[in-house]
Image (cartoon, rainbow, N blue to C red):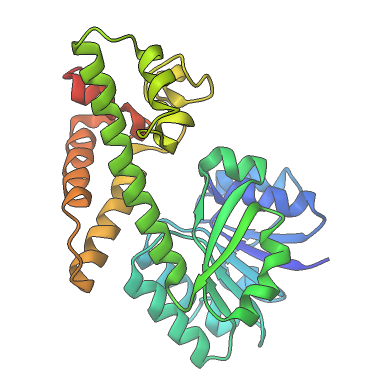
Length: 296
């Protein structure tokens, strides 16, 4: 099986690495947090003392990091991936980061002769644990075909979105749409409450009518209609507001750079910024219904 260096084994990277171990791959893990390394070591990973150590004998490198600055550091610094990986090693960054950083690392990897994919994911911690993530990939088709058998051990849907940076573009466009649709869904339920309409009745009607959307039918922001939604767990777990806000800010930065008009995306960014500023960044993003009710 393949020897894989996995850099960043937190809430998402940890379960992804464990799924690779379950599939029989050899995983060498590195993270700046020792407790996270212990968790994957218990599942069979070998812990590395540094990025350099992790990638030394790897055939594939996968990273899952918080932001563009961390990705640039891990790949571009003298003790990083490009300076220390074996020639021809496949590089996959599954972080959600800014377009400029993604393209800069792509360009540096290409110059150094490494195949590289930006491959952010959708599906949250639950999808990472279940191995049902969606990978949105940007890069050369040859790199994608080489990566696909590896990604299929962690995800259910693997899509080549286009060239360098296309995976990041797909991720931020998708999540901007998700944020906007969730706010609209929450507003509809808040209005229904004010009008005396039962939430289940609204769900039954809207879920089979023109208002149907994922935010309603899979992730309903009121308890009851969709038992698996975070609304039934007091908005714990799921996809944190702070993470949605991060993606919205990335989308707004990309929109400004590209000259795109995204007024609803901008308004969603403001609303989630307010929710986070009130100290609720850890709540699932569907918990914004509480703010719209005036309860936060």
